[in-house]
Image (cartoon, rainbow over the protein chains, first blue to last red):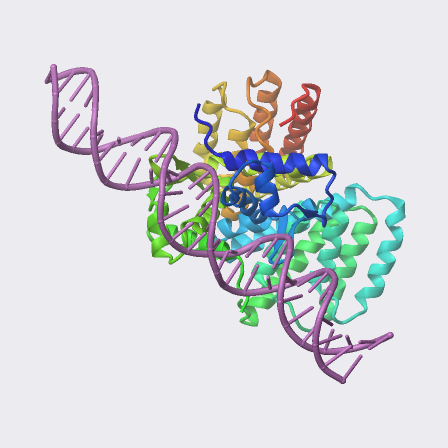
Length: 216
Length: 216
DNA sequence: GGATATGAGTGGTCAGACCACTTTCAAAAA
DNA sequence: TTTTTGAAAGTGGTCTGACCACTCATATCC
């Protein structure tokens, strides 16, 4: 009988315990010493399991306080993977394209799943458009959220952070036109036009950025 | 100075070491005792880092033999995260959608950037299509590679691992039709048709999967 | 030569000891 | 009485040294 990987069993046990005792995100789970005794296992072994879970963002440990269950919706899938993905893929072009890819998909999704209750959202959008500091990034973020795909949102957010915000600064009137056009097409649920306009805007920005010698 | 989370530093150090010393998947990395000494850290602390990496499937440990850098293929991340996270159908849906999103974008990119030299690729594709074991995943992987966006490819690959391959098994004739149609449209650089066909295929598969009660 | 025993090396586990930190609460000071 | 102080208890973070179980290469024996 070789059942190595005891810590994997512990991971499972902890999960089961959380389920059974109905521990909710934010709640404290028993201390390491307590768990170790309950599970008839050494503390160091137990800790190996806990650290694994922590790296994944499933639990949170605070020295002197204890270990807490974190919201599993905030899991570190993206973050963890990114440290291993983005390392050798520093191609700015790839990051840019991938980011754009998520943005376009979000617009497409929004156009295809419009509900009446969202109508007022666009009005709100228009109001904020008048704010000078309302830039492409803010605009897109709203769209990403509206698309409803949280994973895509997370990836997008990460890519945005990674590539920085090269558009900081004033928002030109040309940009506002792009925004308005895109928004209008979305309102009319015209995906093709919206995406076309959005891409044109993005391309334009890209060129502006290059001509300004803006590099992250 | 409170710099807790030493094991996180170790995770990074190990990653850097792997990169610097050009350790390849399958290669052996130094023993725990060796690493602990080199990094001036206790063996138990080092092990916490190693176990985290192991849970992610980035390394593989074999008792009595050593620790080896693993190929990205076997990670348990899928398993562990899914038991914690995927109870929520919404997350499942997000992964699926995000994956599809990358696939569609790849097809789009290929259609828009066709070069003559790629012509023979399609012939090769057709040949492999006759192989029974050539499934959607294989088909799409080729496309992802052809798209040229390595970052997108990596993200797609991990999402695929994450959501598993529920399509394993025989490839129905209906599927082969879908594949052929998609391929044909791509050859003709007809992005809209290709994507439409591809999405239809995906939707069909999704339904098949549900009706078969296939759940990871 | 082939089978077998041995020993070095490795990961797996444990117990015990500190350390650093947070919280609590009772004693001391105001 | 109220406020401040500080000691104690509890927690995670780390290290050490000791075994155990296993693998593999080597030496030994038949």
